[in-house]
Length: 113
Image (cartoon, rainbow, N blue to C red):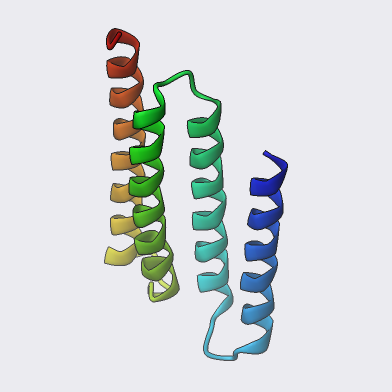
């Protein structure tokens, strides 16, 4: 838990520092990417604290990491306007898929002996 929190805070600090350093990295993109980091940190903490089988935890951690990278890239290249922002819709779609995967795996893990 503490290790994950330290990694999250370091990544968040680097993200904000990059927003301060690079003029092309707009503040709205910094906010999007910071929100993606926070959401994925919460997913990892939920996954680690859930009472599911280890095989499910390992596979979901790889899937969530892959989705997190895709979400971060989408957040970094997202438009600054909310209207017709396909990158934000993609991020929301991936978060919904992560939630559904977590719930399904949680139910299946309880039924597996």
